[in-house]
Image (cartoon, rainbow, N blue to C red):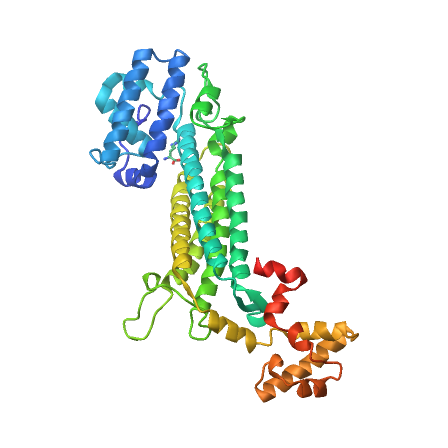
Amino acid sequence: MKLWGGRFRKEENKLMEDFNSSLHVDMRLYSEDIKGSIAHVNMLVKCELLTKEEGESIIKSLLSVLEDIESGTLVIEGDFEDIHSFVEAKLTERIGETAKKLHTARSRNDQVALDIRLYAKSKALEVIEYIEELQSNLEEKAKVNNVIMPGYTHLQRAQVVTLKHHLMAYFNMLDRDRKRVLNAIEIMNESPLGCGALAGTTHNIDREMTAEELGFSKPINNFLDGVSDRDYLLELMSSFSIIMMHLSRLSEELILWSSQEFRFISIDDAYSTGSSIMPQKKNPDAAELIRGKTGRVYGSLTSLLTTMKGLPLAYNKDMQEDKEPFFDALDTVLSCLEIMSNMISSMKVNTENMKKAVKYGFLNATEVADYLVSKGVAFRDAHSIVGSIVIYCEDHNKAIEELTPEELKSLNPLIEGDLYAFIDYQNILNKGIKVNLLK
Ligand code: ARG
């Protein structure tokens, strides 16, 4: 069944019909479509554009369609252009003539804009819940792992940090992600219903009423903008891309840390896989997949940005292409957040190996320079003195704190026995501004 056809002399080409149909994609908007129609009907009744009886009959039938879809008795399939046509066709099958009045003062342009906005808003709230879950798992893991580890720059051992501090860096990144998604929700929280095809309607409708019933803060000001705005999808996909970038960086760390070269953590068997040929292998597939799927979410963002960039106002059919990338980006970010949450909570930490890496990485070299500064040496000179101490240690296969007082003295006469406490890793972390690393 078509929602149009009156002005056509010829049947639509079958190939064109398939090409035009978006039902297989937008079918997931069925409950938003029905919810939006119910609000629209309530408003039409209040504005006396439908009788009370007509309104009741349409709403009752819309609810029965919803119930049947949800119970599986009504399957969304067939030769329909989209979910809006499908729902209206089912309504017509059930109540006949009255169903034809549902679309009074509405266009599919404001209808689809409404459906996708409602859907995006509720799913964005779900993304926030998933982010919070991951944040809480990171915080839990961090709390019980206030242990020293090497901190890196250029992936070279640099200075001592704690695993807690390292994991909490991701907690903070995710906190910004959460705020970005919340901000996008706040900006999108306006109702497009009643914008019509592009220029509103001559009927005396109440847009405030539908906006309120559907949980929006207000109706959208400009009709042309209301039907053609997809900024909120782009904004959400930008936020999803940044979330994925963060998850991908964390994945990269987990992949490195679980390698034989680092052996800082082991990823739980439940989130690893084996090799079909090498029996000893345990691969960090979950982390690798998250890293890999990041490109896919960036791709979705780029896809819709490109679709939108040349469109004149107002609605253009190109916009039907907004859903696939958005749904794909959304599904991907939700599953990656969930997998990462589970991987973090189930991973095992190898405290001893992290300690060892600290010890043989000269991670207290900067503090030896600070010590010399405290004895009156200029920092640049201290830096070079410590450089030669490191060479000496490498030649003798020792950590700085393993050098004897005599060796230290011979390397620089200003070095006394108090150096050992000064460069002790725990003491370093307890000191001054670094106390934050232990919190
Ligand atoms: N399936 C369409 C979409 O997703 C619905 C709107 C169709 N509007 C139109 N004027 N053909 O954009």
